[in-house]
Image (cartoon, rainbow, N blue to C red; front, side):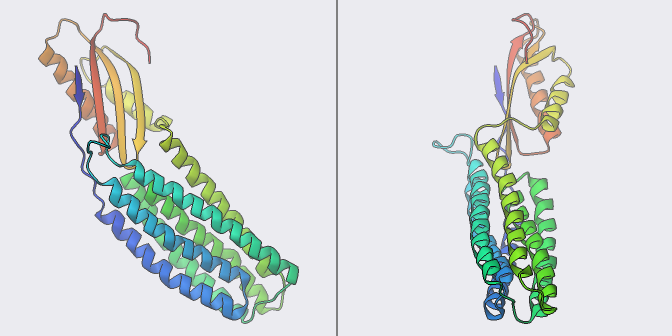
Length: 301
């Protein structure tokens, strides 16, 4: 006997709203930093502007991933479209890595030439504005991403954070340039590239784990086990399988019950297991419970 859970509704409105907010901010920051970077001869500020441009591109990717992911299951995608959201997160990470390589290329050339940007105070001011704005967007987006367990939102949040962090060395470089210290601008750009690459690695690692059917992290698996074992009538359990697909979680488990129970009573226990697991994980969860008599075979996880 198997009892699949009811379909779960996705709530994308707030996710799309925060992404659109970031898109507008990135559009303005790209114009500001790229324009000033070119006008003032600051490689670091120009590189930071290109980072914001990559943020703008990945905002569109994130929006696309969120909208496709919320489509209901159909004949071609019986488990829903949640992994399109995960795929969007992976594309964000690849975009970050490409930006990092480009910035290193530009920074090495700036160090070789030993260029000194004009109006270092203006560079520092633009970087400070970017830092404050993008750190605020990071905190807003990561909070919502954790609430929705959205890989795409979390990836985009870290893109905001990496842009904020990349503005910090640009700020320092601008201050130094205002005092006539050369080559700090190029060194700041290389540090920006390192921060971007580190963020890209972390995002891509998580996305690959999910796309390759990786199991729940230990904390979530422990919650599931506690929920199953807390249901009265479950003698034991085995063959627990877990995975995430975007904001959706999937759990399959075999439980063993008293063989003397009726089909209706066994089904009721399975339904309680389903509800307990959904409550433990907090919402968008599909659970399939297979019921067996307790006398069948050894108990194995």
